[in-house]
Image 1 (spheres, rainbow, N blue to C red):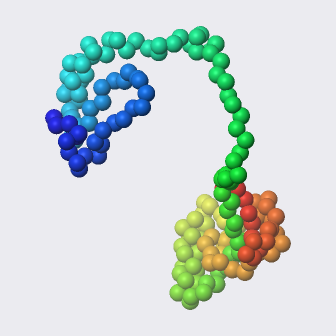
Image 2 (image 1 turned 60 degrees about the vertical axis):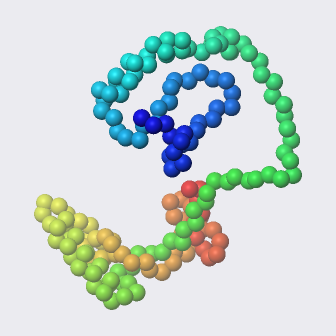
Length: 165
């Protein structure tokens, strides 16, 4: 197999490590290999892996090592990272849509739901039987001064509900 060092179109041209380290051999092969061939390559190179017998420092020595940490004050240039906030404007469900076709489609879907899910042995609530918007709806009038999932309304480009994403 050709190495990718001489191929300018290769995904990797080199792997640079800036400090001394001992790693397993890395092979970049531009094709899928059968499991038997991968195993054969492994057994051909397993002898050279004998010197890799674990960390150079024991856990006891590592735990006793003291590392000094120097406190640096913030420089004038800094960045603020904040949790994303979602802002939703809530509206009441409505059986009337902006387009007549949509209103008609909602009515047909409501009829399908009632005929398929609200007949014996099942029983639906009167609200579901009589109000199409109880099953599927279009956006209606904005909800004012009500809580939504325990959130109080907030003012931000209109009235809505804010919460952390």
